[in-house]
Image (tube, rainbow over all chains, first blue to last red; front, side, top):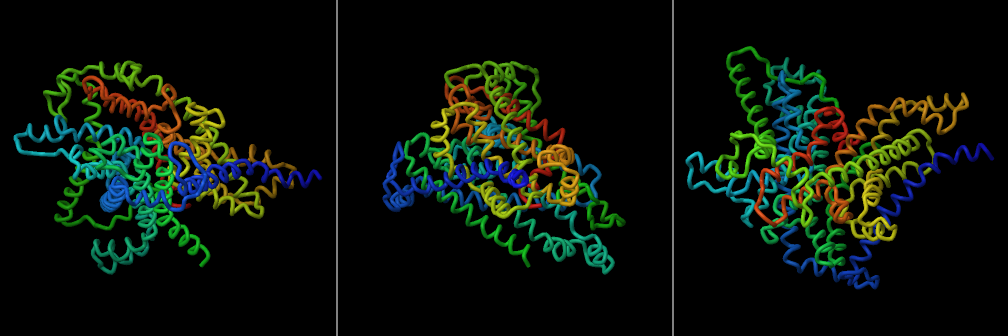
Amino acid sequence: MRAWLERQIPKMVLAPSFVAILIFVYGFIGWTAWISLTRSKLLPKYDLHGLIQYKRLLAAPRWDTAMDNLLLFGALFICIAMALGLLLAILLDQRIRVEGVLRTIYLYPMALSMIVTGTAWKWIMNPGLGIEAMVRGWGFEGFRFNWVIDPDMAIYAVVIAAVWQASGFVMALFLAGLRSVDGEIIKAAQIDGIPGWRIYTAIILPSMAPIFLSAFIVLAHLAIKSFDLVVALTGGGPGYATDLPATYMYAMAFSRGDIGQAASSAMVMMGVVFAIVVPYLYSELRAKHV
Amino acid sequence: MSDLSSTPSAITAQTRPGQIALRWLLFCFLGLFALFYLLPLFVMVTTSLKSLEEIRSGSLVSLPREVTFDAWRTAWSGACTGIQCEGLRPYFWNSVLLAVPAVLISTFLGAANGYIIAQWHFRGANLIFSAMLFGCFIPFQVVLLPMARMLGLMGLAGSIPGLIFAHVIYGIGFTTLFFRNFYVTIPSDLVKAAKVDGAGFFRIFWSIFLPLSLPIIVVTVIWQFTQIWNDFLFGVSFSQAGTQPVTVALNNIVNSTTGVKEYNVDMAAAIIAGLPTLLVYVVAGKYFIRGLTAGSVKG
């Protein structure tokens, strides 16, 4: 009896966390999924009404803008952050004496809250007193940089701030990857007289494919979840110009009192995340079995 | 994976004069990028030390002619977050009161879970781990509505304990991942030998595993602290006037529409809100990076 009890202890200690995850992750996803199929407005109703909320979502111009913005923002953010991160990693990998200091400088924005980042960049890009005023002060009277208040350009302002925040992190990922490449292969290539840039493009970068994938997953994940940055930098505006699915969901849930829309938009967000993450996890698991 | 300190795999040999010029170009590039990352911080600090008058007349990047700490004083104890004008101070303490227990509880649970999953094999343990891992990836929007209702049912709506609860629940996945990946590297013979000597489940955890765990505890605490301190979504969704964390209060100060826009106060407030995590990063950057890479690249 005692021995049996001893054996059950690990399960009993793990159980509360497991139950919590079951309820608060899986149960709650189920609840949100259910609500997304009802006509819930201010309060949840549980009678199913098919895909009505998803049809409303597709018909809403504001949601359309949010998805377009996500695609544009996500694509630019991921591409620029990856390119910049890789460039910085390769430059830092050239036996730089002050590498530690530079690395610290490139990465510190990642420690900040997106709200802090948004607040700082909002001020820097303020048309009246920020970069625009500064460059005009240098004598370029016609200089214009009013992206944060221009509906067509505001989303690019969000990209700038997001890249500033996350590119150092991509640098750290790539730098670790560069350092893990087998030194012997590189030495052999150098002895064969292969030029440096060829060693990068033909040997080092291809061997870092898994890191490219990880960086992509992390950045895509950040892009889809982007909420605080937009709230702090543009408030989703001007108008709805910089709305993202996350801000749309929040507005529906907490200021518009339309939880049916909030639930369905949250489900779409989760669908997008899983469309990216699941193939990744699947390939990881497969790779381990081979 | 997370070891950045090993020798660079530098490829360019530096012998010819052309290489020296290239070297200078390299340093120029690196320096320019350093400026790009530092400029916002520089602008924040200098703006926070200027008077409003000087901000309006001067340039964005100029140093303050007259250093004044008025903006810092206002940001800390006088700025308006809506109808109240008590500055960031009460909200800063809210964040402390919220982050400390949430970090400790979620780290402790992660350690226990990771210990069990890695060392006490039983059927279904891997399935449980996968289920927890999966929970790390969900966008929190999908649990926001039911969580708000659940906190209401539990009588924790709009309270700091409610926020702690939410952060602990949704932090377990990551903390378990960290500890599990750390503990799988410890040979299972250790547990077997301890069992032979008569040590039980808890004894082995307290006397053998926890003392070994200092590095991963540091990584997890830093990761959780950064996540929770910087959180905005839960803070804005599950709090009410008076219990808001510092990020929400900062956003309210910056976006409050009443009165004159005080940019120096905004910047001082932003620095105050960012200072704790920035300090952690400066003091323990190595562990911060390790957490970031462990969270993204499965060890």
